[in-house]
Structures are given as C-alpha cells and as structure tokens.
Image (cartoon, rainbow over all chains, first blue to last red; front, side, top):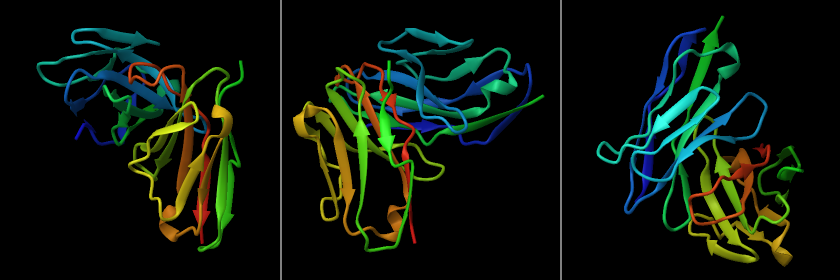
Length: 111
Length: 115
C-alpha cells in the first residue's frame, strides 16, 4: 500500500543553519504531496504542498520539490530560526482521497 | 473564521470505561476525518466521512470504536470499552475537498489517557 518514509529525528541545528528533512514515498498513481508542521502546543497545519511532478511548494522560506523519478519530496530551508522548532510531517494524498503521514521529524533550533 | 473545534482536550479514564470525543468542523467542509496519533508517530486515519457517509472506515477497530456524523456536520468518536493501548491523541480534521489534493485543517486534538 501507499506509504511515506521520513528521516528520523530529532534534528538539532544552530540558528541560520541549512535544513534538509528527507522524505520518500511509495504510491500507485499520482499522489499529491504535503508537508505539515506541528508547533509546540498547537495543532497540525499545512506548511506547503505540490500536486504534480516537478512542482515546487514553498512557504515561510521552506520549499520542497516533487521528484517523481526519485519518489521524493525533501523539505529545505536556507536559514532556520528558533521559531522553526517543531515537528514536521511529510504526507501524501492518494487518488482514493486518503492522506497518509510519515512518522514525523522533530526539529530543534538553538540560538 | 473558526477552526476545527474538538472536545474534550484531555480525558483520563480507567480501562473498560467508555469515552467519547466530539468534533465540529469548519463550516462548509464536507469531508471530515478522525486520526489517531500515538506518541512520536504520525497520524493514522481511523475514519473519513463525506457528508454523513463513512467512505473509509477500514482502519477503525469496529469491535470497540464507533463514529457518527449526523446531519453531515458535527461528529462523535466513541470507544467502549477503552483499553490501555488506546492512550493517544485523537485528531479531527476537515477539508473542503476529499479528493486527496486539498488542505486538511486539524483541531488541537483530544488527548486520552487510559489507566
């Protein structure tokens, strides 16, 4: 069945460091891909999405490119801030309407 | 605009007791989801509704879990009887479209502790 695999955390970075969180997926058909973020004490919220191959989603300095050839959707940010500390979830939306999440990657940014 | 509202935020019960969670989705959202999130894991779908119809309940443990969405708006998720392994966060989400391409809006979750 469809699935999502993320790099394990926690990831600890210093402020202004470059961030990459790897995400790969397995799916039949052509899924949509998402990154959701969960800040401490808050609910999950959409960070960015891409609905077809080669699309780039971007928001708040984060970006991810839908790579069909490598079945990947890695999250990147050029310069992280303390306020980016959160848990990040990669997810796919399949053609049956189901949203499937990865296990989450906790990011901690130190000043 | 009000977001997805869930209650209660926290619930502590003894095993074998019943428990119910309530969700009020964003107005106009036809698709409603209940997810289970264990500590350190990603959310796992329990059930998805399109209006009042459950279109995907394949992951719902039907021996003890039940859900309803009367009138296609609010929804209730019930566990009876609860087991120790049911301790988790129960998330409700809604979306305008259930086709897998749209954004899901999540509530803050209901954290269940079973003693």
